[in-house]
Amino acid sequence: MKRRTLLAAGGSALVALGAGWTLTRPDPATGLLPGAAMAQSADGALPEVIEMVLGNPDAPVEVIEYASYTCPHCATFHANQYQALKENYIDTGRIRFVYREVYFDRPGLWASMIARCNNTPEFFFAFSELLYTEQRNWLASGDPATIVEELRRLAKTAGMDDAALDACLSDAAKAEALFTWYQENADRDGITGTPSFLIDGQKYSNMAYDEFAAILDGKLG
Image (cartoon, rainbow, N blue to C red; front, side, top):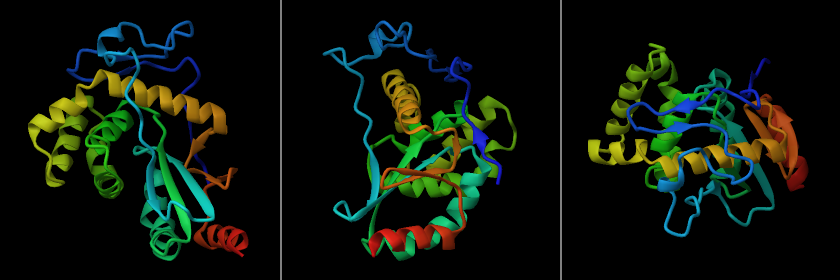
């Protein structure tokens, strides 16, 4: 199965519509984005990126998914294999499941910023499922302004209001932190496409549910 590849190392800038900031690669000397000093916290640090986790935090097996909200193969995975994994392994407490975003493009980053608006796993995973279910619709136009409006529409159906959305989508410090976090994760774990998985630290590409279950059962004994 083909997988989408990551942006090249010197990839295109990610620009937030109407937010007044541009997201590029950090300066190697400072670790910061150009012009981002005003967006940092008082102590000069970027905000913490919280790991989004489901299942038993003390489970003997950890599964980390790397995925992009704009990746059609990720949407297919979440509509199929993920549902069975959730029922049989996550909800039963047999595995610890971690979801990490990969940013191929601006819409993927915007979607992530909304999903992480209040930094709670409950909203994050519920909104993530909505993003995948409605992926074709909110991405259909290909027009950045229309995509933002479609994302805002989805967020409102999930209970967010305009004030909260404005605050999330204009948070330059959080955008910088997320993009830096994504790059560090991808470089460290050798992520070259989505969906990709780390099962107890070993990398796997997309696979059928039966293959996934066989690996997990083998590790669970």
